[in-house]
Length: 183
Image 1: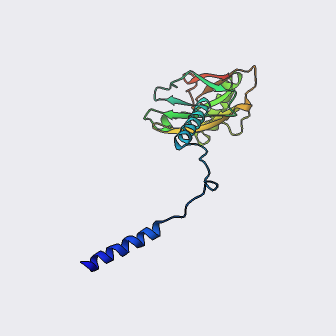
Image 2 (image 1 turned 180 degrees about the horizontal axis):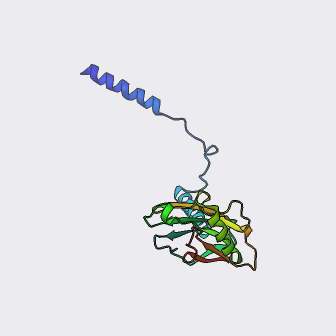
Image 3 (image 1 turned 90 degrees about the vertical axis):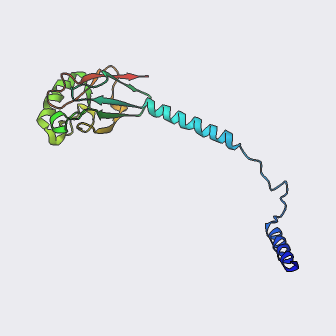
């Protein structure tokens, strides 16, 4: 028993010696700049601000098998250097039968762009290559797919009217809307 107590005492003394730290002086201890709670609050506010800015510079448009977009207008803030549009095809039909895209151009150019886009064919996603009248366009997608594209807002000029439409042959009659530039 004496041996057992001696071993425990030695272990306790050894652990106590190992765990002792040198005392810190007041000069070397720096106060915390902010508490963890206030840092978390600041990070949360910054994340919310970034999310709000992202939301102001993006939108989601849905299309379906009935050749319809779920919106008739897209509002693009002039404050956004780039604007992101996600197109979701909520239908089930394949791209070859009921493909959809979004093309943006001046309102006065829509008919000519649509005509030349049809001639460009499915391999070019029904958008004429390097057409200067096209401000931006998405990929052609089928049912259950989605795509995102970016619009350079610097390509819009004050005083012009703009539209978005689907350039799949025959769709523009039902799939067309206004693009509004907002402050």
